[in-house]
Length: 319
Image 1 (cartoon, one colour):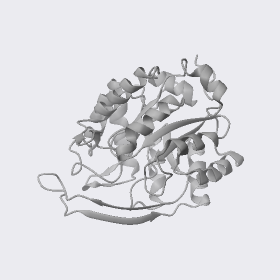
Image 2: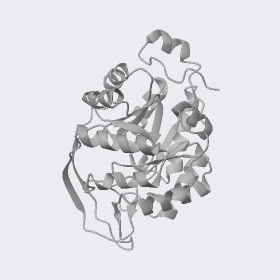
Image 3: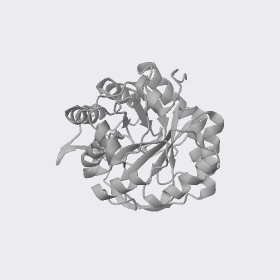
């Protein structure tokens, strides 16, 4: 039994007591994302069987949870929020990984409509991402060349994702009705207003799961000061996990380990093992963060331990 799963991470006295005896580290692998594909890194899985195999390899490396985006089978570089595709992926993942925690994205991709974001919940994942507010993004995707399927000449995005309080609340209500635990994606401290409203409305159950997304456009800058300030504002009864986008992945996730939180790594967030050296797989990203964690004195959570810490059912979902 893992006791005291949540604590006051900003309390220096409690941190000093726990620094050599923190709870096991939950590693989530974000295997593919909703934007870039094999044109950016050949290791990014796109088809259901590729996603399942990549998840299996990461699971064997130490991941206890997987975050999944569906890909459009007629346009593999494009995200799709489709119940059937999510069910197929979830089934294949569960066959290979009997107890991994399955987390489907409601964030989708730049072109995903608000209505489409609800579709992934119909596949009944155990967790689902829940963005805490709007964001802006502008970036380019390099050309996708044959022999890759569905080649293109390059893509340019200049978009806004227009979440409102009402949309976030509707997604949270749907998750609660289906018994899906929300993983709140928090990009800057102003979005705590939204999470507090969800708590007030009774749409969340502790432990509250927060995922800090730093290094993303219009998110808080990925600095140590900002990480500490985010942790200081966590609602009581919360867990947190760290994401660092791109070159900030390893620095931000290491901070998460040190401060008592959990981490997310994978090819959705970063395609490089180190400067100029591409990751060869999602498993390689997991292996690297496992090495860092163990050097810093954190043990790695098994899927069953992660379920206990997160307040999830000990019986894995079936598909």
